[in-house]
Picture 1: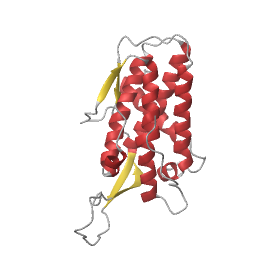
Picture 2: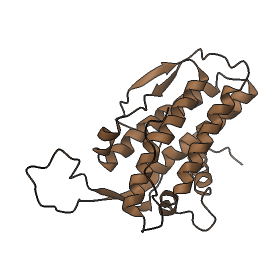
Picture 3: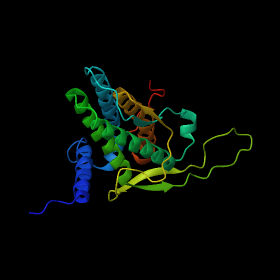
Picture 4: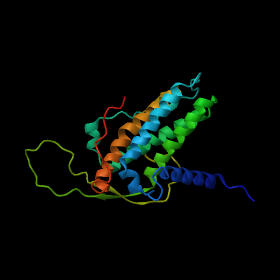
Length: 232
C-alpha cells in the first residue's frame, strides 16, 4: 500500500482537528449554530487557555527560543472593535490565529522538555481548531434595518449589517490567511505564546462569538451577558 501524499495527510489532519473541535459540543448538537449559541463553550475555552498558561508557567527550565516566535498584538480598543464589520473582525482574528499557529509550531521544534512540549501541542491544536472553524463556516451578511436619519445624533457604528451562520464550507488550503498584515512582535519566551493566546480567546474571539450569537441565535438560546473587556 502506497504512502499517502504529504498534501493528503495535511488535509486529513485538518479535518480531524475540526471534527475534534466540534465534538466538544454535546453529542447530537455538533452544528455551527450550536457552537456559537451555547455561551458555555467559549467560557470553557477561556478556562482551558488560562489553565494552559498557568501550567506552562510551572514547567521547569523552559529554554529561551533561539528562533523568536512572531506573535500578534491582540490588545484592542473596545469602541473601535464595535465599529468594525463582522467580516473585518473575522479576518482580523484569522490573521492573529495564523500567527499563533505558526508560533506554536515553530516553538514545538525547539522545546524538548516534556512539560513545555505537551502544552505547546495542546495550544497548537486549540488555535488551529479555531482557525479551521472560522475558515470553514459559511456566512450570510444581512444589511442593517433602515432607520430615520437624525442629523443631531452623535457618531455611531451604524450601517455595518449583521453576519449570521448558514452552512459549513470545504476547508481552505493551508493555515495562512492571504492578505494578512497584522501588527506583530517577536518574543523568545515560550510563556508569551500562551499569554497571547489567552488574551485573544478572552478578548476578540469572545466578543466576536457574543455578537454573532445575538444575530444568529433564537431568544434564550445563547449570547448571554457581554464579555468583560480588558483581559490582562
